[in-house]
Image (cartoon, rainbow, N blue to C red; front, top):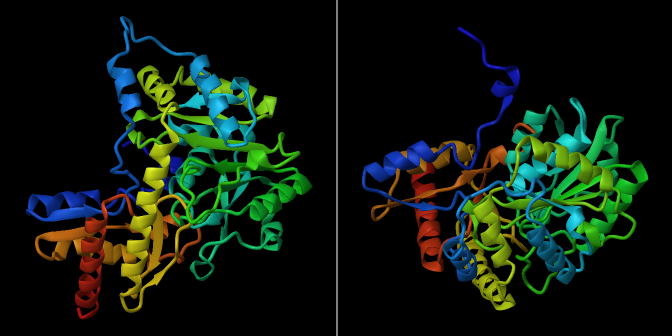
Length: 397
């Protein structure tokens, strides 16, 4: 029998989706599963985006430009300008989701065996992208006790080797919800310039900054044009996860030229989804304020309820819509599976994402979970009540 590649065998399974079979079995038993495991917002997609697709007069659904529609890229540049990020359409390549943008970035700036430093816990698929590209992830631990703030720059410097090519951050963070401050971004920028590294920022949650805080982009940093690469997406901003439209932004012309070659190999980003994404840029600011107000209310309720559970430690998110919690269990993986297979309260149970898969360092995060607070407040309260009751039963086994 032919053998699967070593790379394929190393490819990690998604900690977000690996419990899906157990959730499906629970549903077949008639149990209602409250999904806290995946960042699929229940916020409605802007009507203007949906109508743009409905009203599109298309006789041939053709390829778009490899780099994405010029009109869309020009409008994106205007959107970024409103956020104090000054780029042109030529600095932007439209991609099939932020995932493709990150894969293109890794392929453009790193070779097999090169290293990228990432604060952990981090979005689990970073491991997958790195594995696919033959790149080594070098993790640097951020702590729940410090709300997952940026680790000291001195700790970053200890990890830099001759194979180090880049530092990657997610801001605001998935799975932590931490929002890096202007000062923290400035420290990373100085480090990138000092060691001639690329600084890659996944900024897909840019709009979601809470408690009066403002997002600060790496492309707002002076003298970082040759080092900075932004990965972005419409998925979370406009509740358009299924559109699969993202982009890569850089003022480094060599990066854009090289990314374009990767993009040519996959032909073009989706045409209809670009129509929706272009229209979504006309969404009024009031939409975002309403969404932010709703997420803040959900966060406050979730954190407040979680803190009532004995033995649970919670990090308070400052952005995005994820919360990390540490449970009084040895294995969050076992507990999460047990919840779906063996526990229900009033005909309901909860699906969470065990956090070990968000770490690259083995042994870390084993007793932590990520909760996506993308459901209405009543569902969140019921979910935490189920967690509290389930933990008591689980520990008595």
